[in-house]
Length: 149
Ligand SMILES: CC(C)(COP(=O)(O)OP(=O)(O)OC[C@H]1O[C@@H](n2cnc3c(N)ncnc32)[C@H](O)[C@@H]1OP(=O)(O)O)[C@@H](O)C(=O)NCCC(=O)NCCS
Image 1 (cartoon, protein in one colour):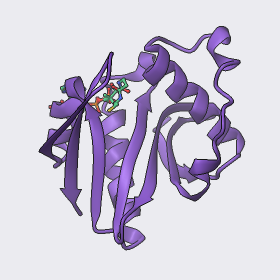
Image 2 (tube, rainbow, N blue to C red):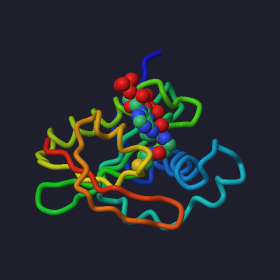
Image 3 (cartoon, protein in one colour):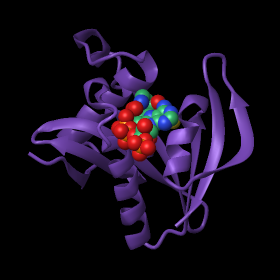
Image 4 (tube, rainbow, N blue to C red):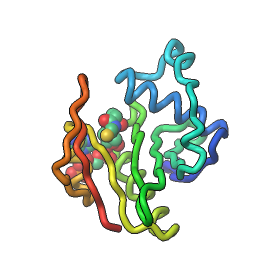
């Protein structure tokens, strides 16, 4: 069965699954486990006006990304996470390209992101340019990147 790329709603079952997936992949850096599920339900109200996108293998959510309005005609791409057992299959690239398509259809002109330094090459392949602004957090360095749609 082919992977389906689609938008889902805030506070839906898909949204709940996406929050668990990204918590496990981005925060814990490991696979999905029962323990992490309890920790994930913080305040999600900032996501009410985000464009929420997922990659689905039948009912299983295998990838997720958010687009948050940012400035006049721009979006901030964040929380990109692919299930650890499905990385390297092209799902991340297809999901980001799908996000570009949705953003264009909705009239947005630019996308910004703060990418982890070890993922910069992935985003470069998708057309993003590093703008040189770097934020250093204790465990991760973030590089600002932009794309004109
Ligand atoms: C980084 C991530 C989103 C990439 O998604 P993916 O589905 O594994 O990647 P894809 O299979 O679509 O890769 C597309 C291309 O990018 C390359 N690529 C993927 N991850 C890369 C990385 N970390 N560094 C350099 N190149 C990378 C692939 O080799 C592939 O190249 P090709 O087109 O020449 O064959 C995914 O691995 C992930 O969720 N990682 C953990 C969380 C994370 O780091 N998220 C990003 C936060 S900024």
